[in-house]
Amino acid sequence: MNAGKEVCGRDTDSQYVELAVEIFSMLADATRVRLILALRDAELSVNQLAGIVGKSPAAVSQHLAKMRLARMVSSRQDGTKVFYRLANEHARQLVTDAIFQAEHALGGTPLHHHKEAEDNR
Image 1 (cartoon, rainbow, N blue to C red):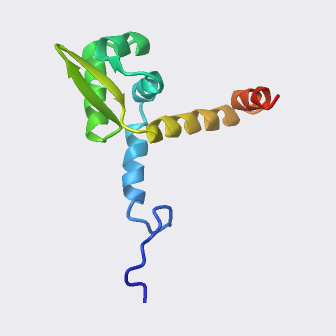
Image 2: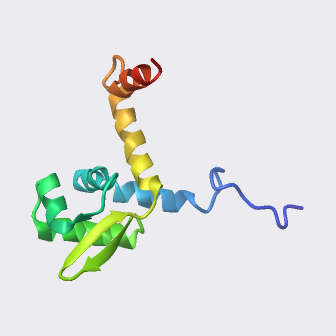
Image 3: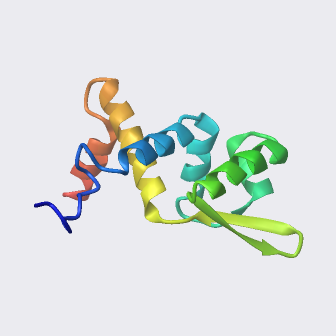
């Protein structure tokens, strides 16, 4: 009866639920969230990213390697430098939504609602 019926990725019985949990697990690290925030608008080298997130280049490289395996970032080599960028807009959106949720958790009017109110003027 359900032969050929595609299951929506957002259904409770979706095959993607476990993979989504792995993605959340990948983002359950402050350095990785900071890396995604740093990469949201630019392609950056490991050294640039290390300076932005306040970690050693070796530590940043390890995080980026894991994020590359998870297909959250992609890389490009230029001579001896490796540059990273977000693989797609979804990691940026996940982190943005998590930050917005964190703002709501603090109570009061979240900062992103102040921005939305300014944009509507």
